[in-house]
Length: 163
Image 1 (cartoon, rainbow, N blue to C red):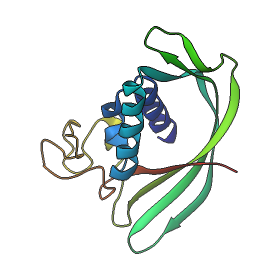
Image 2 (spheres, one colour; image 1 turned 30 degrees about the vertical axis):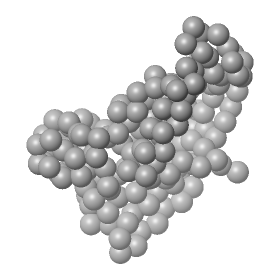
Image 3 (cartoon, helix red, strand yellow; image 1 turned 45 degrees about the vertical axis):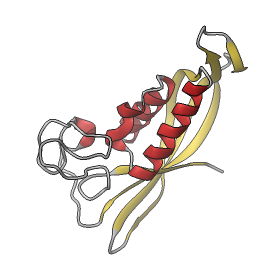
């Protein structure tokens, strides 16, 4: 599921379509994601992650307390990373594929149980089981609960540079 989330978020980023990643991101990080994408659009540019591949996923920490379960996964990936303008002209970076790594932190309520074959990555509301259809606030259009707050399923809460 971490790899699925990774590709959903990165596709939303490179396609400049933040709604694509709404289902898997907590509010705070999704708002930042949306703002950064809008900045690119305002500058008539986009970031391209060409030949993106995940080479390894490693759990680097896991913690549970009375409020949250938290898991941090180090993502080792490789791609060419460059910016282009609206006409496809190279503005930054190059076409060489290179490795990089980030830590992706996921959270859910300590009371939550992720159901097999259900949840946001399987296109179902983790609360009511209906087809996943969220508004901008992450509210399910069927049962009217916020599913991106981590109460019912894992959500991406933070991305940080790995050491």
